[in-house]
Image 1: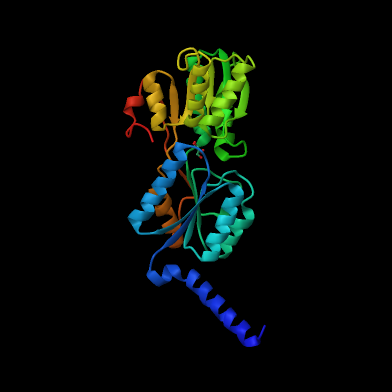
Image 2 (image 1 turned 30 degrees about the vertical axis):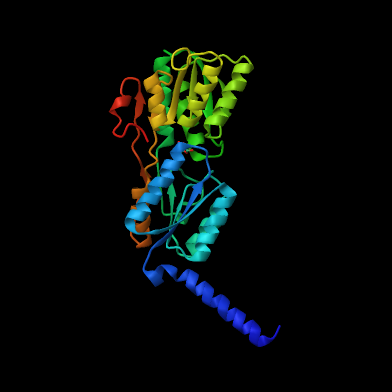
Length: 312
Ligand code: AHR
């Protein structure tokens, strides 16, 4: 290839890169990348909507990517290459983030974690906005100990075993349940945060003759799947088998209303406004709290009508 042609191509490439990196400055718009987890759950859709609505309200250009963890890491690299002003990240699992977060830090792009944490050093990310998952597990554990009056068989449905909320919701729950020798967790398996998967797992337990008095599901989607499986087996969820889960989505409150579910611990997906407020402060070089914890309450048959929005 002739030298002049090579030079022309290099100049064109440089021009394209300069345009991509300077886009935010060119039209004065802030550009934020959001790496969301691909997950079959209404909770996550509500969170995505919350982020999109807030971006629109603030006039921020949002680059949204919805994938598994390998795709999230690739999306972060893509955001960095495009020169975004800030990044929102919902990390699928706790580990594997150090390298890409270091790359964001080197590029001077602050990263705010949405809805769950990770184990990379704290200097690599600006803030984590989430629930206190161990507290949620303890709330569920106290309710279970009370309703079973210290005696009974429990099955547990957790999400991705390497995910922050799965680990901490189990730990918090067991912290309470281990104080009650009459309560036994007879099975514990992943339902991958999904209604369909939760149904399949409970169907398999029932087919194998596993007996249980209560289902503790780490999200409402899996609890609704458990309800489907119990009903298909001719059992009465909410009465013969108690159901408690986490999230407080609208469908869970409807199930409580129908008497098929007993309790849900709130976990807010409405993180868009706090996410952008924190990210923009970090982008501005202001000090931000590294851990911002949203308050959670437990709702059951006695108080579910008190929830301010009737569920998420
Ligand atoms: O990190 C928050 C949790 O993740 C929500 O409880 C759940 O529905 C989601 O998968």
